[in-house]
Length: 405
Image 1 (cartoon, rainbow, N blue to C red):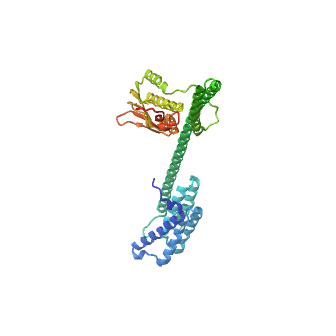
Image 2: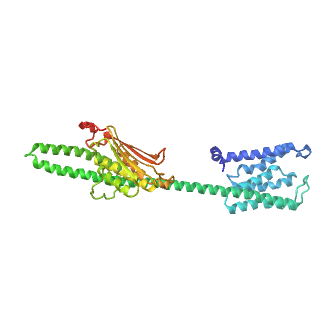
């Protein structure tokens, strides 16, 4: 359906005035192309009456019922002038279409009857003289056909507009629902991450409490051991503060946190891949480089990324194989999970909330997540995390004299 330009929709009165002027010009042009003997006796006066007959079109959308009444009132002109301007018939057609297209069914029918019944009565009671000999019955039948045809076109346009508006509303509601589901997925995943980070932080605090108790007990007997315990408390407290900041970044709920439970990490990847292998997806695990001292939240993030990627591969890859690759470098930690299957479907509901969760976890540590189909077939999940934000001591592993390859 072709829509009018925005400026036309913003100025309906100006558009209708131009339409009325167009009807007058059409009447003048029609008069000029006819033989002179059929012209009105006074052409300027006839043009004036033509403007008067077209005037209801100029206000058809501002005051539609006034326009209908004014158009019916112009029916006295044939009795005064002895002829009817062409704009009069065109005005009746335009008003019939306008009421049928813009009003509900009952007002549209009433307007059509009010417009055309007087015309039919005049064609029977006081028919105009014309070059063509037309009987009153034929004139009435012609009026009925024109009225019904124009009314039908107007109602068809009205139905099309209603259908288009309904489709737009459905699209708006669907978009709002999709946005709400996406926001809910992010919120749910943030709460889940917050609960897991709470466990990590609580574990760090528990360790600091135990170390502080031990340091106090051996402070007098073994100052070196106490100093080592205090140094460990210092490093642990820094890691705890960083995890606390991340926890506050993602915490968006007042729900009670989960009880303290051990969280999986890098050591659990071998068991995870074995479980996936037993579930029917052949998978291999490759580790390149030497893991430095990583925070527990980081190892948990790596585990969850691999877990979610392999779960998606089990669901969507079909008969395929998968590979998990961890690359520990001096600058980047790369987690890559690939498979040779067909990948997830294209439907919006097949995207799932798993990718949302992975993106939230990777973004929490300043990393970047790339997911998508591989050029040679299959699906790939690749997370790149900056090492300078991941080390347990707050700096790169090289700070301790280590070199990873």
